[in-house]
Image 1 (tube, rainbow, N blue to C red):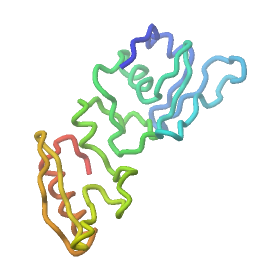
Image 2: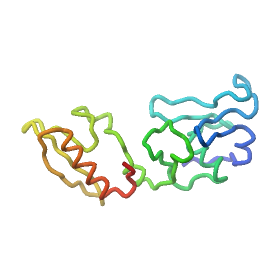
Image 3: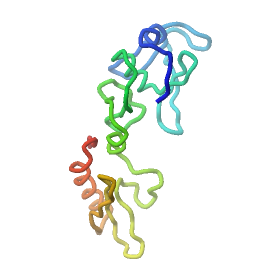
Image 4: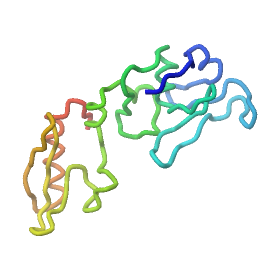
Amino acid sequence: MAKTDLTAQRLRELLHYDPETGVFTWAKGRPGCGYGKKAGNLDHSDGYWRIRCAGTSHKAHRLAWLYMTGEWPTQQVDHMDGDRANNRFVNLRQASHSENQQNQHGAPVSNKSCGLLGVTLHKPTGKWYSQIRFDGKRKHLGSFATAELAHTAYCEAKRVHHKGCLI
């Protein structure tokens, strides 16, 4: 987590944050950005909203935390619904790296077999395998006739073993 000299007071002088919508707007006019205009841009490479403020690019969810609490977050700021662009304050929580990782809602881009979290196709058998990682170990949950059944088994195990999971 990057160190910055930006304080909550200075942030509130530069930007207005609406906790109901999660949107930042400029509180003061600046070159290229007028008063009341939406601040920042969505970074399509990772899905986070970023705002250049006080000479540094910041992720909007971290600025939202600073704006609302008066302090920089000491841990990661997790989007509870899994949508990195949803910066409504009720959707944000401080979480350890492990909790943040456990709150994944979608399959990684590398999962080309079916796009479901916790599911892979075992090509030799044509069955769908489900596995979960917890306590530093991988646990096989079984093989299934359909990807949906394997995903259901994964979600059930996730609710039990991933305390940071909110699905």
